[in-house]
Picture 1 (cartoon, rainbow, N blue to C red):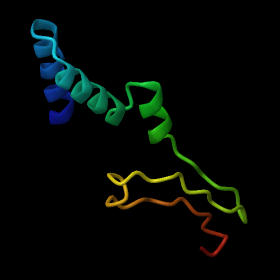
Picture 2 (picture 1 turned 180 degrees about the vertical axis):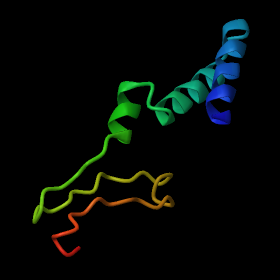
Picture 3 (picture 1 turned 60 degrees about the horizontal axis):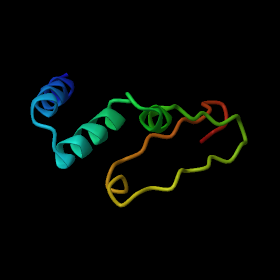
Picture 4 (picture 1 turned 120 degrees about the vertical axis):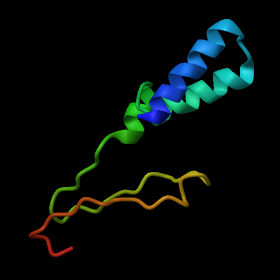
Length: 78
C-alpha cells in the first residue's frame, strides 16, 4: 500500500516539475503495480495443464534474484 501511495506522490510531483528520470520511475512503478499492459502481462497467472511442460518466461537480470512460484497439479505428483 505504501508503494502505491509513494507512486501517487511521484505523479503529483511530476505534474508540478516534469523530468525524464521521474517519468521513468513512475513508468516502472506502474508496471510493478499492474497498471500498464506490460505490467498486467507480467502479473498474469500461468497454470499448466496436467502433464504439460511449463515454459518459464525469459528473466531479466533484475528478476533473476527473485524467487518464482510455480503452480502444479496436486494429482500430477510434482
